[in-house]
Length: 389
Image 1 (tube, rainbow, N blue to C red):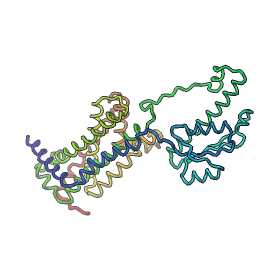
Image 2: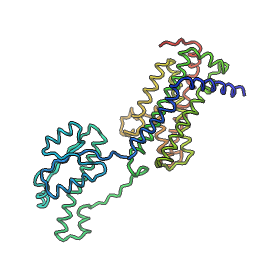
Image 3: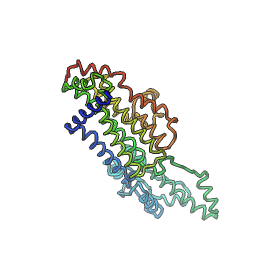
Image 4: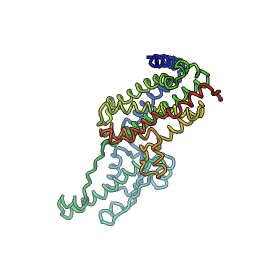
């Protein structure tokens, strides 16, 4: 009972600190909720729509006009400009007016009908990887469909049956399935990583900041005295309020994406609760560990910010871990967001049992327990260190 009353007393003290400092309210509630709404609103259509594309149609035939109409009908592409020459189209792409342009040379229709394999060209910029890749996909599809349409007309004119036409134009039929994200939505794949990653950034920064402020204003001795210099009780009481507030924010995010926006998931409610608990406790544990390594407000927050920002690249959501160099693959295990992402994929998105991702579960628990290795150093800093700006 003594320890429980001490934890409760320190928690009330921390709640008073949070109430008096508006920075905590903004970083724990306002900014995470703004981030959640920003990403889900920005990617609400799932994929970029109506990317501007130019056309250089020097053939001006019924076949070329049909190709242009089909391109304009694509969901992700829009024919925004028609250029008289390739030079104009290239300048427009260099000025970022269009992401790509299609060049149809003169005589394309005549060569198609004569079976002489005309060439149409498309050029796309990879300055923006996403836009360039999607524009290339649409232009490639238009080129393939155009040649298939002409081939179908020629085979039909020669008396081929519909079955023979299909066999000639598409010898192998592809049956593709996008598992777990059938719509190919960027919102489903990016929001579920970026928003938790930003929340984990705030958690680690604020945990180190909270300890650093005790050192800065020389209130660490008073904080420890409330726990009879028991650093374990002091840490638990101090970060109990942080954990509860962050858990509520994380639960709001999970409810919003799964119940309001209907993000796909096969895992149950317990898998979401378990993942949220591990996310919060592992982040707070890493922040305390960073302060224990460098008992300085500035240095510990620098470590937390650097580690959290690097985790976006090392978690495997944007660039697959298997495609990285072996040293980077090994280094990816040192980032909590990597283990969060894997647990989310296995247990929440695909609904597999947690035993299939047991190593990532153990890794997050290890991050949660990291303060045990530096807890004596944190106590020593509060009792003996002098704050140096």
